[in-house]
Amino acid sequence: MAVELKPKLDKTYIDIDGPNGNAFYLMAVARDFSKTLDLDEDEILGDMKMGDYLNLLNVFEDNFGDFVVLQTENPEYLEAFAK
Image (cartoon, rainbow, N blue to C red; front, side):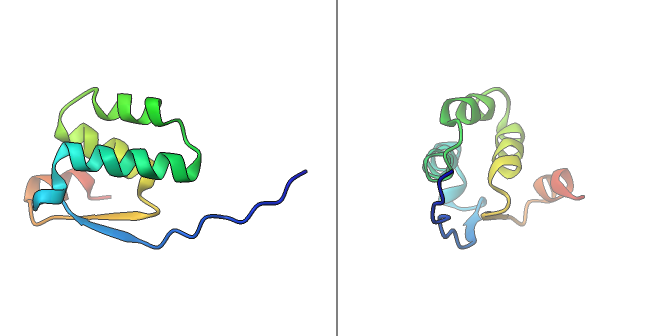
């Protein structure tokens, strides 16, 4: 058995209405978080590329929603993520 220090990840806020909301930026953030959290980067990025922008946001939220808050004023995105 091995005991390791958990990575400290504070909440990150990304305004998806701004320049950091583009798909390339979000995939770069996903790649970084995947490495930090020891997740399958290729699978996550592949899933993000499988559909439209809402799919990309959904996959991002599913995998990194505990660490990243996506912020928007876009009613379509808010409605899609209303739980």
